[in-house]
Image (cartoon, rainbow, N blue to C red; front, top):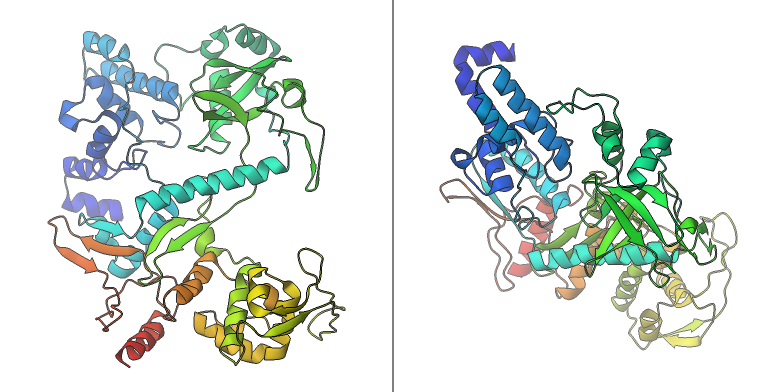
Length: 527
């Protein structure tokens, strides 16, 4: 019915024009004009025949036929399209020969704009569509986020480095193995740098999407089934020796990597979370033919590496305005859309203790108040058994001032402080930091951060401390302009000295009661 209605109101050419100007063609490119600029730094009118065919080759499966991640597959698909054009007499035989011989020369600046904040970009997309409807897709709007590009780059770098350090402390894990995709003859040939197994049985002009079972297709499917990370290269081990090994990279080239005792001394075999094997002596201790591996470039040298299993999230904000400066929802957007900044609710742990101390200071305690840091056993009806809390160091320090208890993050001091203060009184005050009252634990484990709150919620609550007691809403869109530069939306920040009109503020996260919050802030500022 929709197709009938569309054909009743638009010609075939108009429908095709709408299609090619909106279709996704990979690497954030929607429409042929955008793809021409992304891949070749040209307008569509400036494209050669081969370049036009390459862009056309991306339309069906841009995730698999992609000149960045799978150049040889893209080239083959391009040549198949050129062959079809020749067969259908859209081009001459001479044009065909020139086009198929043209190398795939992708613009070197294709990644120059690639600041990865896709978790937040997806959140912004959803919010804009919820607020303005589907017309936002067709009116050429420009949406400006609050992200600081330098801080975002640093956040991504920090997440990557810290996760890698954590992962390496737990040792080298066995890899996914795909030896079955190769025959013995394939491995022998590739080990001798003979690439014939990868081209055997393929015609000059074939369609990758129609071929089901050749070595090159099996290899490509193997790459497609494993996580792609911008920070790493990928490969399949072909041959292993004591001092080096050969692997097939994503460009389907054989690369030789040499052993280095200093570089791989960390790669002791993972046994359990708390135990590792002995230090590796050579590549035999790490890999075998058929293993799928990840490699990293450091100072122009390629080294064997692995992708961390642990995940992390990071958010930073301006506490005075609530604008989000950096936002990393996970180490890889490609591996899943799950946004750990706002959708994960881990226990807050010791980061929650300042809120317990704040509630004490608001109820006649001061930084010099003393709590006896000594062993204690609790029989709490909300707990299943007796509870014997300890400090992280395993030591006890006797009478301790609250300032020192907080600085040293002493568990016993925090627990006894909460017991003296009273859980109900503490929760009533802590909720003023933006934590939902009914989600705060009603037992003494509250002092150790047993409550489950997202990184976004905790960051927002910490902002109160840095913002002289004011609780502000988080926001991530600063303005929206239409194609003519006219203002569609502008976020108005609160001024410390006067209340501004904030009724048009962008709704932040769904768990925040922004209307009630904004009313309270305006009332406080007026007072």
